[in-house]
Amino acid sequence: MKSILLIEDDPFLSNIYVIKLEEAGFNVNALLSGKEALKEIEEKRPDLILLDIVLPDISGWEILEQIKKNPEIKSKIMILSNLGQKEDKEKGLKMGADYYLIKAYYTPTELVEEIKKII
Ligand SMILES: [Mg+2]
Picture (cartoon, rainbow, N blue to C red):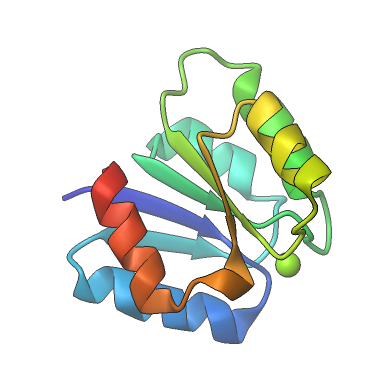
C-alpha cells in the first residue's frame, strides 16, 4: 500500500482529502502543522508528501528546504497550495518539489486522480 503524508492546516480540507485518499486505497497520515512533519518524514519515508505552504508554525518552504537537505529521502513531493503566482510555482519546483498544484483548481476527487498517476 502506498503511503502519503498530508501536511495541511485546514482541518476541514484535511479530513476530506484523507477520506478520499483512503477510499482510493492509500495509507494516509495527516498533520495539521509543520512542526512534526520533519520527524515524521525522516522516520516513515512516505511515498508521497502533500505539502501546504501557509502553515501556522513553520512554512511549507522551510519544510521543503529541510527535506531536500537529506538526499536519502526519496519521497515525492507535491506542493498543494493556494499561492497561485507563477513565481511561487517556479520557486517550489526550483527548490525541488516534484509537482505544484493549486488547491482551488482541483476537487478532492480530481486530486486523487492526479495522485494515482504519480504513485
Ligand atoms: Mg494552509
